[in-house]
Image (cartoon, rainbow, N blue to C red; front, top):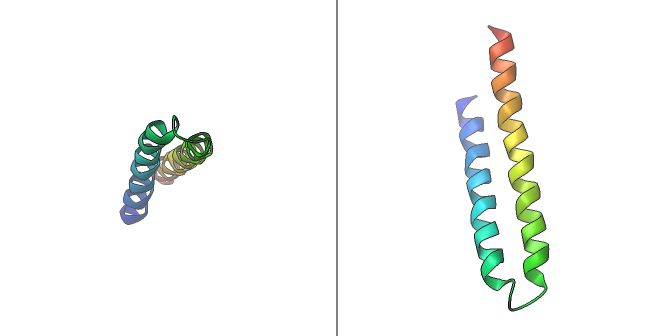
Length: 61
């Protein structure tokens, strides 16, 4: 189960990196706005997945 949490954490970090990249290309094209939305959704989804794993582990004990 820890491996799954580490995978979700890596996905959150990838979303944050994508958000950083989108800020750089946002001035060049309209594509930056779309990439920002995708990055924010990825970070939020995987953050909730990690919270779910944590709550499930707490309630299991």
